[in-house]
Length: 318
Image 1 (cartoon, rainbow, N blue to C red):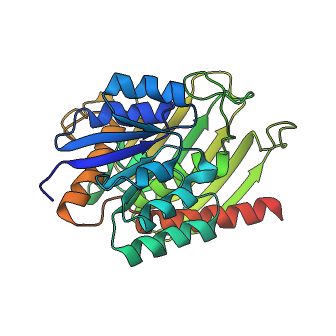
Image 2: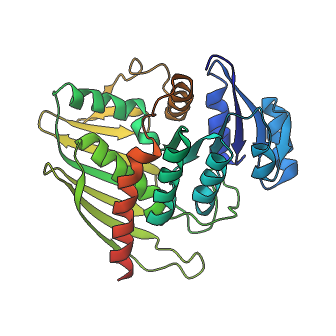
């Protein structure tokens, strides 16, 4: 494919804007349609990014013959159904994490993508952050092997607000959304499937209806282990912090930045063409479309993560 890839983007909230900012730096790609539930706000965002077509209905964008691909930055509960709609309309799709909030739905997306022969990718951004790519390159070169990953995913979300401090129309989830990042990354970096998984959770929030605290233990087939702590109650620095403890060193990854275990910063500016994990994720999506190949973080590659999440959910509800 040598022509410009025409994209529809669904979800003009905090994460949709991150994608729009990343796409501005990618040649041969144009966002031609923006979909979100509030028409006036969507028109405002579209105006800033020069997007001509605005709608509140994904079906309107899928009906546009010029649209080649769709990026979904919509509420978790809509991801699987919207991914299927895109694929059935003949559009390549990148869906933000998580692929689905059930194993059955995740598996169906993988099967339909295979049947249609389209690029279907899930935004497991940690695979693309320069910090984690640097560690991955060291592992691939045989210079580092993970013994343990220690991960903290902490937010302060006792009310339903998004990353921009605006009210959310949906409820976020520690297991299906935030744990998905680490479950997938651990297996990816260990180069070994997860064979043991345990979880406990704190009390269910009376109005949000979700657990606000969770602890997960994982073990890969090669013996590496991972301890993951998650909270929506943390009144302090927000985000996810990864400690890689290996046979030749210790590394701390904070989004796109990387440090040694002694807090010495490592220069990761030459790892990729950008320091922005979202932009790198989008670059992979469009490159896979142009080259007719499976992308890193394809729905098929991340499917095992959702089986682990399903098994953990079964444990927690037993």
